[in-house]
Image 1 (cartoon, rainbow, N blue to C red):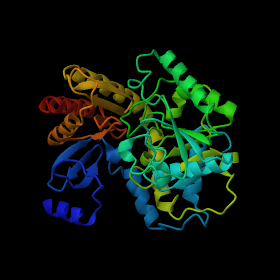
Image 2 (image 1 turned 45 degrees about the vertical axis):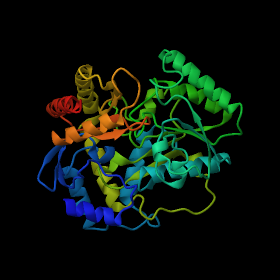
Image 3 (image 1 turned 30 degrees about the vertical axis):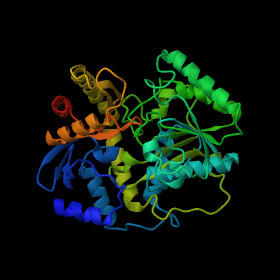
Image 4 (image 1 turned 180 degrees about the horizontal axis):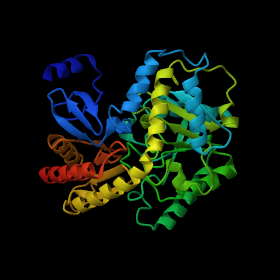
Length: 427
């Protein structure tokens, strides 16, 4: 393995991060487990950054990919594409957006980039409202609206970005307020901000912030924001790259926890729908989607093979009620983890919804982030046979837990026990 690591270092950028002091090469997976090149088996609680949403080597998906590869792999959007049209029809219906149009991309970054293009063209404004602690991708435009310093390598931007309060419930100036008062304060902040700006194009927000450490506002915040945005004609973009497809258990989309004033104008998705294939996309009402007055295509977005995988994956997810499984097993897992956390002075908070759970670590007795402890727990969990992720806007001190949605109760208990040992081992 060390030889491959040395080769990696010789040809890869220094900023291309790898997990673990001794990085591992994953060679194959099945269900909720993966194996490395040394033959070690791991319970996967991160799913390739929330991308292997259903299961590793899901037979229905691998069969669909193999059959489509035997026919045609690629054609581009210049030709009619039956799997793409079928997938777009299903997503348009599921999105909740009236008169929806769907455009496929190859990633969440590209999906958010497209959403920004649509919103700025439609509104004739390059001003974007974004949430503090947010992450929306690594392209030039999406980096510029990311409210997380660790993922913002430049301040140069084609956009003017203004950041509003509300993405993090338990930190910041409104943390001590009740949920109702928190929402009122954030709405007042938004109202005040709009009184000092030109006309923004859109607010982009993750219903649950992913890279930011699985933080979220109280339910209803974005519905309250929507009343203000509508008065100013500002669009609402819901970034569902990590929250979509039932992962939160209670809802199919994250925006549905804020649905009082209707769906978003634009919805972006990616990651889990392809179960590892490179799929992203944008859903918008026709008036917004059709506002571009120049030609556009996607060479790789919506390719026959990625759409075949997505169709099979979506069908499996719906037919087996994986949203319900995320709600049931995720509810058990988060309660088990809260019990584990009660015995660890390093845990500041366990939060999340469904199978999207964050464990924030802090130096005992303080609110000071402890990235060293998070790194130590990550290592100890791997040694115990469990793969988890890291994140958080406060020095990457949050353990991110997002297993495939087919997770069983027994696997949830096993993972929680390994995490308990890892937290204890890391001190």
